Length: 125
Length: 378
Image (cartoon, rainbow over all chains, first blue to last red; front, side, top):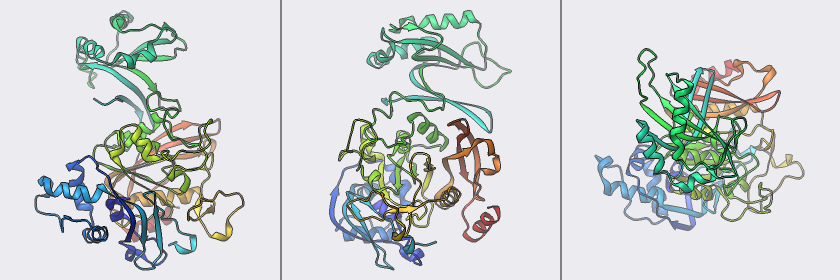
């Protein structure tokens, strides 16, 4: 699971609503996997990122050189975009958990794939 | 240049019916000389499988905005003699059909002497269930029981206006066939599926001679096979009726083939107590599925989810199953935020068909008023 993905996920446990974001990340196995740098794609993603959640997750994984916020003219700033590319796309959590911040419910990540399934009783109707 | 180059020909006779053909492009030019030169540059080893001495073929000519005499047509076909055709011509049932396509523009009042563009390609599909050579389901590493035929997945990506740097999502991703077409157009892809085994590439293989899906049989491996791994974002095990995406608009297209109970079972997570016997359980923790999912609920959820998470102008493309004798246009699901762009039928049997529905988000989702409108409509 990439950090871009983590940034888009929220808990859907019943009654939790918007307080289900962001999920608390815990990783036991992480892999750094190089991905071809595409500045246009990264620039497109910047406005969609919830920055506080990204910083929290990056901190949990002890990542360094993570920009604290989007900078002026980021679309043309290669250094900034490369750092964001690395954080968003090149860090993969292979094993770990995502935890609902409100209910404490754990969603496992195995082989890089999060399992978000809940039973009927647990979810919103 | 890309290993797989396709030319999708789209002909709209009216809004309800749109015919499309897919050709594997072998050459093109703005004049015949340019075309021939382009064809001479096409790798011979890619032509040989379709031109060898045991095969049969025929060559057709399509001209757009101009009519050619029979003599003119024969002349153009004869000019292609330099191609290494070794098979036999069979006009009735050839194994391979090649097409010369000449584009004379769009203005019927000003038809030019010479075409603007000429294309030569190998015909692949007419939007029907045909096997496609290059993105063939047979050759693809990982298949499930309902692997989308490669040609149709290209058409769906085309309907979704998928382009470079888009994010495309398939909420019923299965083995990922639809993601491949989107990645081919340069989009980054997400998929979810309720079936843990399918997402992880575990369990019995759908291909006849194999027992187990190997460790590299999964959606990511599929993309890797076509050199498209860099477009793989993530896949998740998730129930499409209970999505885990946060509030916001971040998908440029949602392209999907929802399960409709004919081949794959239609499922939704339910209470532990209602598990029917015989359901396969995965050794890792996950919630077994049990409840049947009413089709209308599923499309309601899909349209609502799309209205919430698509960017403005983004598209939803999906298959809607239909019992043909009772079908009316009112049956096509509706949503106040989504505009119907097209509705194309594909016959499955004498009484059933499915319709490829394309919708575009034209209005931002407003929780109260839009849900209210939906209640009235249903």
